[in-house]
Amino acid sequence: MYKKKVASTPSFLSGPILKEVALNASSRVGGDAYPFCLDLIKNFKTIKFNHQVTFFVGENGSGKSTLLEAIAHKAGFGLEGGSKNISFKTARDITYDGVCALADQLTLSWRQKVKDGYFFRAESFYNLASYIDELVDGYGPYGGKSLHHQSHGESFFAFFRNRVGAGGFYIFDEPEAALSPQRQLALLSVIHQQCAANMNTQFIIATHSPLLLAYPDAPIYSCDGGALHKIAYEDTEHYRVTKQFLDNPGLYLRHLLAD
Image (tube, rainbow, N blue to C red; front, side, top):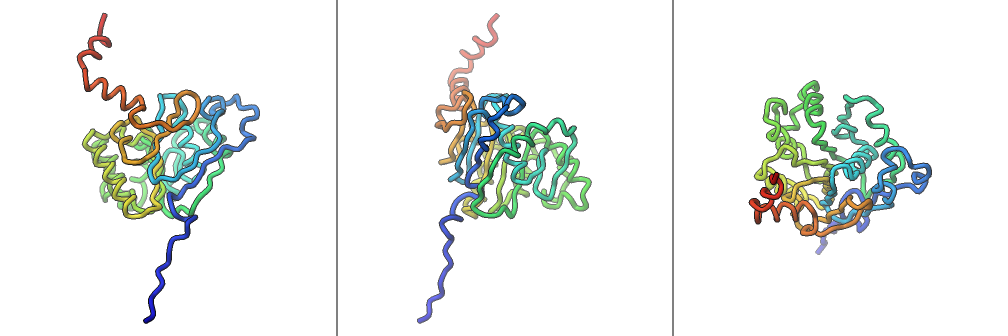
C-alpha cells in the first residue's frame, strides 16, 4: 500500500529564526564614540540563540536596550518600534546615530527568512500608537480599537494579545513597563501559546521583571559587569532584591527610610 511521505523540517531550520549575532572586529578600532565606548559593546563578540525565548537583563545604562535596538534595526524594524512595514521616526536623526552605527557593525545569521515580526519598544509605544491611528484601519491588527482609547496597560496588552503571532520574530524592550503583575503573568501565557504553536517563534526580551524572567528554560544574559554573560534566574538582582524585600519589607524600609 502506498504511504504518503511526510516532509520533515531540515535540521538547519529547526529552532528559533535568528541563529546568531556577531559584532564585526573592525568596530573595535577607534571605538571612543557612543555606543562603542560602553564596556558591554567593547567586550561583545557573539551570541548564539538556541531557545525560543531569550532574556537580557542589566542595570540602567548597562547597554542592553542599545544592543537590542541595534539588532532590531539590523533586522529591518523601525528604530522607535514597529515592523518591517511600520517604520517611523519622531526624534532627531542624531538621537539614533549611535544605534545605527552599531547596527552597521553587526552580522545577523538567520535560520530562515523573517515573515512576521515586531520590535516593541516601551519607551516610544505612545508614538507608535499615534502613528497607527493615522493609517487607514491601522488598528485593525491591534484589536480593532485605537490604542489611545485604552489605558496605558490595556494598550500594551492589546498589542501582545492581538499583534503577536506564531512563527514570528519579536524583540521586546521592557514590555512590563505598563503591565500589572497579573498582566505580566498573562503575557507569559501569550508567549508560551505562540511558542507552542510554532517552534520557530522567537522572542528576545530586555526586562527588569522577575515575573517574566521566570519563563521556563529561557536563558538569561546579564549585561552588568561590562560583558555579556549567562546567569541563573535565582542569581539575577531582579530576583534576589525582590525576594529579599518581600521576605522582610520592614527591614528594608527601616534601612532605606532611616534618618
